[in-house]
Length: 432
Image (cartoon, rainbow, N blue to C red):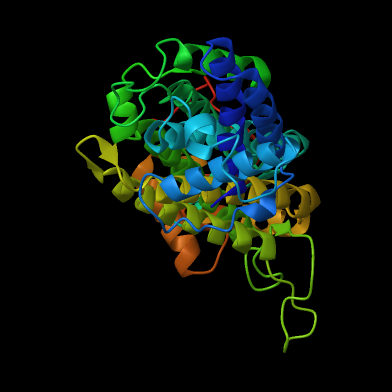
């Protein structure tokens, strides 16, 4: 079970004990040591006391009870009692007062997810965006050949190419942020089936308000506790946003891998940092290890989303019975993407350098510069120039001059790769 879930459960227990004391339902003599014990668990002091795996009952009851028992034992110890007793603090009667696994565990799932996003993925994703943005600005003046379908296309700048990567990530960050309000809703107060049996009417509002004060995150009671217990749409949507982010990261990693391929027999337009030897048999070989690591992370995250989606479908009547599986996969995806974004930024993107001679060679050898001739010659004649140049291994200029379609001076005037990277209002005088 992710420790983030354990810590979130303990934070809820701390808030619950304080609120139950304020509501007059829990003796301060018991509430105070419960709060201290819960605080210690939430801060990671007793992490070794939680050995359970995610493969347990679908409500997370075993882990929830594990937390109740550790807190109760520690509270009794603080009161001078030996471990193993259930008095004076009882794990169910006192630590779990006004609560059920069915509403506490999904609440902890939300706490862990939002906290993990804010402290891990959000800053890591922002760091990668800023690193890519710095490259985009630095390389704005480097004109290169574009590629579509993995085939030569018209020019763009290397900066424009990297600006696209930044925009991809900004898009996904906006979608992740849009998922958060639904995750702020906590199932607390629903108890067993959503009715709030055995809890105080003010329990959930007060606990969520207290959690808001402690974390700065605007937690609120779920609008519909029955839906909060039976389904986990908010987590599925968040997982879907992680899945979409992973797919774009995979695209970015593959692009950089392709652009760095070679160094002599591939595209070779980027030089990737040599982080470690790439082969046990080929001396001097350097592989795009960070790109490949990011690709594998992305594939794992996409697979995790499939598990989350199917687990969400197992909401039978009043309770979803795959809660541990959902949070396990969401949390793993969140951590993997956080680590991978940070590593890819620091150990790959920061060290990228353009191979200017190779970029220029590809740019001026490309037949797709012929696109600049279309406004002057028309599509068919321009295609004829490209075919002749390709078949006879000649330059576009040579082929067009031999066909009598333009002079060498006209070609140099019409075909300027640097002018092909943006729209132009001036129209050529094509007479047909």
